[in-house]
Amino acid sequence: MSKKTFQEYLLYFFTSFITYSFITIFIAKNYTEESLITILFDRVSTYAPPLIINILLLALVTGFILTLFLKFFERRKEKRVEDALKMLNSGQYSAQIFLDMFSDDLPSQVSAIIDKEFMKLHEKMMLISEEAVSAAQQASTISAETREEILETERHRIARELHDSVSQQLFAAAMLLSTVEAEADSLPEHIQSQVNVTSKIVGDAQSEMRALLLHLRPIKLDGKSLKQGIEQILDELKTKLPIDISHEIEEIKLTEVVEDHLFRIIQELVSNVLRHAQASELEVYFRKTEDFYQLRFVDDGKGFDMLEKKNSGQGLRNIKERISGLGGNVRIISFPGQGTTVEIRVPLITGG
Image 1 (tube, rainbow, N blue to C red):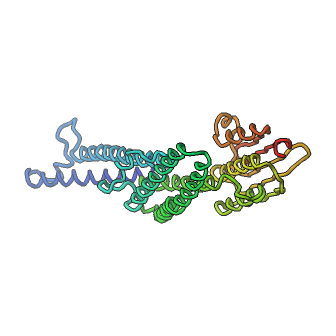
Image 2 (spheres, rainbow, N blue to C red):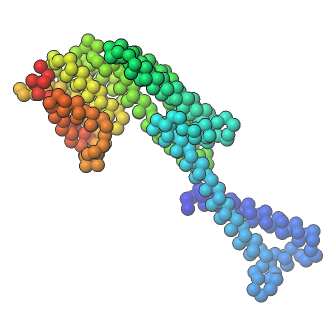
Image 3 (cartoon, rainbow, N blue to C red):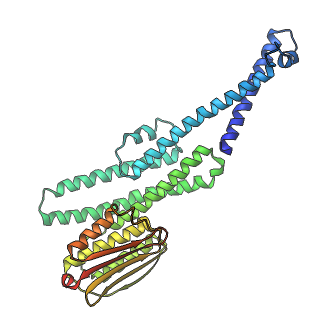
């Protein structure tokens, strides 16, 4: 039993004890002629304890039952909030639980302000999700050239929408939570727990949003060289993470197809650093050797167990598929707590 739970139990016990005692005193003074001392402390029979002992035992049992009862409902309420936040963070924007939990007609889950911010965030994500689906359906009915142009325009528009609306809402929620956390000691234990869970999920959502905005940048280099494109992505990463980046990137001219593939691969690698690595340093190398073009990403982040990740990680699978299509190979080295190294080699005959 935690200290907070024990304190709550003592409160319920003493409240029950005082209540039962007052009831007994009231009955003794108004409906009996015996003295209060006799009623409370004398035995009725050899086997029956004094009434004061019965009152004490009854208060103990009542306090225990009230503690269990209220803890059960607090945990049930907390679990619903956790489930709702996890669904929102995983992209299940249309879940009815949000309307059931955060409606203005219902009691607040965390606080009135935070509940309202989450409803705004939910509504904006729903709207953006519907627009993205509509754009995808429209794109399938038009020519490839026009579809590419429309998709590029939509990517820019959605990126602006996400940055100007959802990102701002997430930032506002984070600021509100930081204010609540500053006064966490004055809040009930179950509210503190909800605030901690909410703060973590909002932080994760902000990281996912930064990675998504990075993904929504133009697929093509838009007339830039591959060197310029890589440096621009790394500069953007610096604005989103407190990370020290060192790089050695040669000015290498490749075919448009190979450059586009490598550019998307670099976006995927930078996204992984942004979302998962928790790194403080990143090294990026792109050079030409006698036999191949070499791209190396080295971070000092949390790494991962390669045996556990062997059959998972959609981003790494996409990278391997792209490089395999170019006739190259990918080598990934990572250990928990020791960072990750990704080395990509593409044959000269492919890139030239």
